[in-house]
View 1 (tube, rainbow over the protein chains, first blue to last red):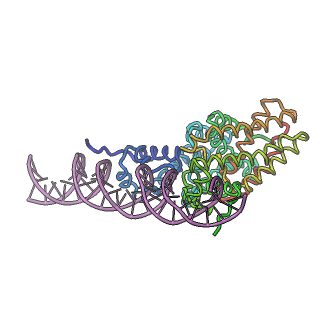
View 2 (tube, chains in turn yellow, orange, brown, cyan):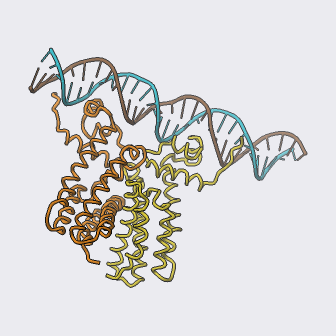
View 3 (cartoon, chains in turn green, cyan, blue, red):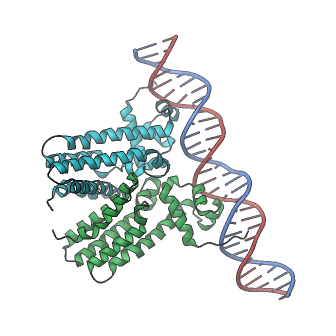
Length: 187
Length: 187
DNA sequence: TATCTTGTACCGAACGTTTGTTCTGTTCGA
DNA sequence: TCGAACAGAACAAACGTTCGGTACAAGATA
């Protein structure tokens, strides 16, 4: 049986699923091996720095996907309401309708936290600022824009946690569907 | 050196700290042993079912504390606004000002999730319903009350996640301080 | 064209360490 | 003298990691 080289993105998606399901500590190399259908030694061929390297690569890809699906639409020119609705669609795809937990929560804990917090922190601040920029362009003063943007980030993360804990994706759907409207509401 | 029996609540608090810092998988029995300054074998004397038993006991105590600090004030008779403000104070104490991550997030993942999700789910639904009851007594119809209560739960969980990931407890403080007011706002 | 060389993808099997757990105690107040 | 509170030391199993080696495509050499 010939060794068929697989796309790196496919590998990273499979690794991401395993990390999301079990967390950093819970995702043992055996599990990562099973998730990718690759031998443990093969994983070390692709990621010289081992499990940490896999997590870092997964985080990198997640960042790129988040940028493409969520941040880019927000940075377009044009109607702020439209851009916020595009963000909502992007969030729904990125989090697969709330099915999937956020790496922010999982990699922010314990040893993984110490490694990845700077990166996670940067991602959150960038997201918040991008939303705030849109709101400012929609006519809100900077303070209002920033405080509403912070609320939006909080709502998304909170909805993911509550969705997962209750096993009810409706929570995430409801939170998303009222998000754009609430961000733009006049006092 | 004599073995000084210690209070079970003290033990549970120390265990809870370790679980909160490292998550369920990350909190090895060695770490739990260090956190309690008890030998591993001694932990098994107190918790016959091992690590799972420790987590279950920690969760039980957290539930009791949450009940005393957060739910009880909500169930008092009298001014709804006052009760919601008491809840806010209780939340601030329960989560130590946002310093501490919620067991909901940590125990909802992976194998621990499979074990504890029913309990976590119950706690969230109870919290949501208790807030909704207060809002109904404040004059809102049931639908509005329930949807606002859900938003409140989401906000608290989200603020904890974002606080931890950014290392900024101000996020949690800001979220808490606007919570009661927003819950009672007329359209 | 046939034969080397190189490099990438892959894996079985083993490495030493740590995991969660249990056995066999000792100490000491009641 | 009994039971509760402790711990040292060991257990098999799983951990993250590395070693040695195979399979095969592509390029160079002859």
